[in-house]
Length: 216
Image (cartoon, rainbow, N blue to C red; front, side, top):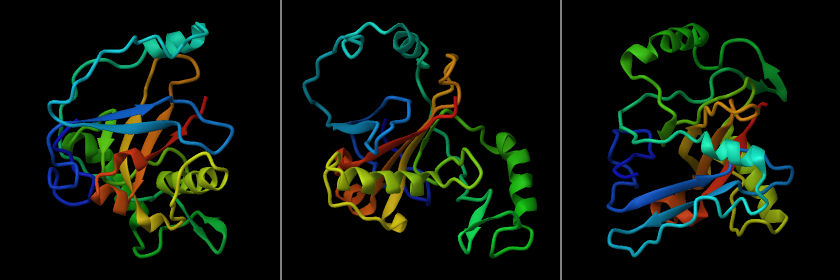
């Protein structure tokens, strides 16, 4: 993927605007322990590459994993500019989930409802989103915040290299993937690749952390 924007401004003017390919890798299943569930690899133009065995990862020939792999959507993607909203379904107020309008605007719920009813007429949502705000799968869940918490715990457990900031504002969404596979157990899997701002600026894509929301 190329010429994409990971900021919240004009599409095509973010830190990903460079030649080459950015490979987003993930296994769309949640982990019991705090660890990254994927990786990001940047391949510069002209790099020598070799095609690998597509099935080498499944050394135990697990049928369910094979079915999931075969169901991965295949085909080209077309880039379009899209609008994404920040965490909007609910917020925590004084440690308790808030059920009323978000702070800052008395009619925020109505505005979100209008946007959801019109968004497909403006720019239809696709399976992969680069940059912007993370897709909110469940009420009271902020995907980037959840990923940051898991990254901090993974670093503390020695399963991911630091330094890692626990401040969510130091992180941005690199990409979202709505797996949407027609395989029992993986229909609602969503993958989030997040990265610390300083790593993104320096294009240290190997520092991206991957989390998965999976609601079987």
